[in-house]
Image (cartoon, rainbow, N blue to C red):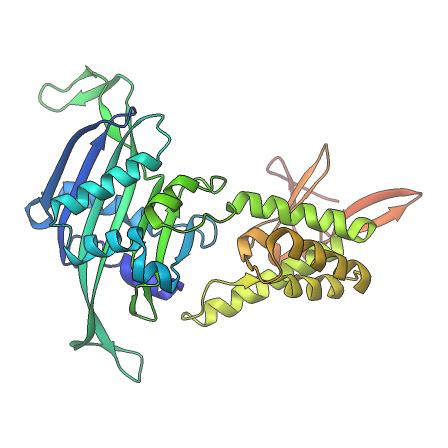
Length: 375
C-alpha cells in the first residue's frame, strides 16, 4: 500500500465519516483465558468512547513503512487453499457478525501471543464506498468504483494504573483514585485485505508492529499464514555490519554520505509522486551509491555478494533500514554528532599532524549550551 492509499483509509477512521458496522472485543488474561467478549454497533457508542476506539485503530495504520508497517503478501496457493486466508476472508465477508468465526480468530491470536499483561483484542469492519476519481484527479462523490470491505484488528496491553490524586469538581477538592485497568496503545495489528491503487487486493494485507525489533513469528505464522520477515532493527544492524566487513578500510564517511544521499533523493521522488510505493533499495542500488562515494568496484562487488548471501540477491530493504532519512549521525566513544541529513556535506574528515579529525563547517550561528559564541 502506498502512502496515499493508506491515508485514504485512515481518514475513514473518524466519528463523522465511516460506515463501520460494529466493533468486537475480547478481553484476555495473561494466562490466555478469555475474561469477556463483546460486540457493539458503532452508532450506539457515545462519541467520546467511539473516538477512543477509533484512535486505537488509527494507530494500526501509522508508523514507518518497512519498520512499523509491514506488507503481507499471500501466494495464489494461500488465497485458494490457505486456512488462515480463508478465516480472514470469512471475517471480512461476515462483517464480523459471525460469532463462531470471530471466536476462531480470537483463539488464533491468543495462541500466538507471549503474555506479560492482560490484553484487549479489538476488531472492526468498514465498508468504504470508494469515490470515482475523474481525469482531473478529483473525487466524484456521486459515482463509485466499488465498495471496499475490510477489517482492522488491534492487540492492546491492558495494564493496572497507579493510584493517583484526582480533582473532583463537585466539592473542589482532590481525592485518591484507586488503581484500575487501562487499555494501552496497540502493540500488534493488521488490516485485511490490502487497499492498492484504490481497490481491494486479496493477495495482500498490512501488518502493524510497535516493536521493530520483534519478528512476531508466531503471530505472522498462525494469523497470517505466511513466513515472518527479518525484523526492521535486525535488518538495519545486519546491513551496517555487511558494509563494515565487506568494505573494510574503504568504509568511509564519504561512502556513507553517498548512501544517505541516495535515500534522500528517492524519498523526495516519492513525495512528488503520491502514488509511488515507499522507497526500497536493492544490493545493486547500494553498490552504485558506494561507487559514487569513492568505493572501489572490487569492494562494492564484495558488498553485493555479502548482501546476497545474507538477505538473498533479490531482497530489497526499506529506506529506513538502509539509512535513516531523518538523521545523519557520526559517533565516537566520547562524542556524538547529529546533522540534518540534507546537510551532511557540512561534515568531512581530515588528517592533521598524523591525527584523524572530524570537521564541521560552521559558517552560521554557533551556540554552546544555548549561549551564542564566536569562533
